[in-house]
Amino acid sequence: MTERSQVRRVPKRAAYDAATIHAILDAAFLAHVGFVVEGQPFVIPTLYGRRDDKLYLHGSSVSRMLRESGKGIPLCITVTLVDALVLARSAFHHSMNYRSVVAFGNARLVDDAEQKNEALRLISDHLLAGRWDEVRPPTAQELKATAVLEFTIEEASAKTRSGFPVDDEEDYALPVWAGILPLPVIPQAPIADPQLPADIAVSASITDRSSR
Image (tube, rainbow, N blue to C red; front, top):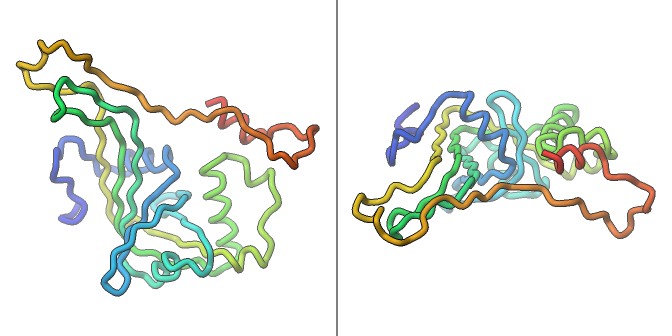
């Protein structure tokens, strides 16, 4: 924890240990990358994969985010999971149950083809474990058209909320329903591409994800 990563608002909800931070990163798959270029701030959503204290991001080789971030400029990466709406008896005390991570560090472009291929596999398997082995791997031309960024987490904080609303004592007597509305991310039944032959079964990586 440093001045930069310290949680100041409701600090009792904060955690700084690697296990908590890694668990949240592994449960999510969408990150928002914040950076500044020529004095202008940008925040870009992107998928990612994790290995140890490194996150791997990918995109087009002409992406401004990846091109600029690969120069080693400081980045701030945030990940958030919303678990439930917290519905109180007053408008003021409505909230949400969530798990979030804010990570700071620098990044580098991955140029080596073998390392780039491995990073792309990490990202793919983070979304659907085992999917990489079911599909055609990238060609040399596709790898050339793809930029991969390796972001090293130098410092980070997690912040979470769980539980029921905390109302003012006098509001507990109000005839207003209060509680939580869970918002789980639940995969639906897969929908086949119209051009897919009818005799091709749903891949194991998809059935495994759908059955969680």
